[in-house]
Length: 296
Image (cartoon, rainbow, N blue to C red):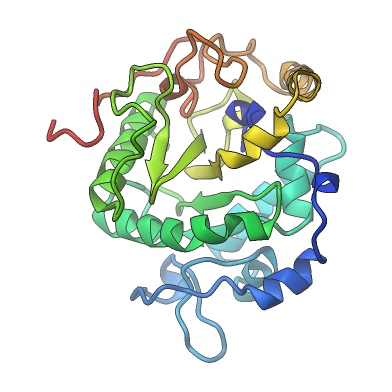
């Protein structure tokens, strides 16, 4: 959902579908049966009937969390980020998805996304979200939001937490790794997969001060199933138009030049490993794992 999400979504006009609100009523974001603390302690809320929530829609977030809660404060930051008219967020497709209520949200119980309880929660959220992502809309995204911590960490530490999360998620994946996707992270064509679905990710953190499009007060991870990019870049004209538009906005939005690790979708020589987590300077981030399925 940030700079790396140049590869992000597709125009809603390409789809013939009922209004999103009625669709969400027919396909509620019901929770998997996962035990959680109360919302005031840093996790998703329950509906009036007491059913725990794994995923929340935009309307459910607004209903569940009052203004003083950290969940609402972090959510309101994203609202401002995606809807500001004074400083347009580079990923206009993320903004479209938000306005159309096509995103799903989950709030973690602790700041480190790679903590065991958070890994289980995110795995449960992915298992619910990915099968229904196409029904939510062409600009859909799963947005994972962590609670605030006492002091921001260096961007390299957040990078390590992120990759530790992906490795732990891979261990919980109920389906085998897709045969057409390489498993070596430094290989062209590699991307993160879960439940058989290839995904793209973008990470926002408090450590990002110059790369403003990757800044958030707490760790925020946006996950997009890659089928949205296949539609967005279905023709050379669509590819060129989307990239030109988003990159121009990035140049205006960030206080740092465009990352050299970003490239066209599927471009040779560009690794997705380097695009998920962009450092707050124009140096390549490093994935500490050669293979997410290997013991080391």
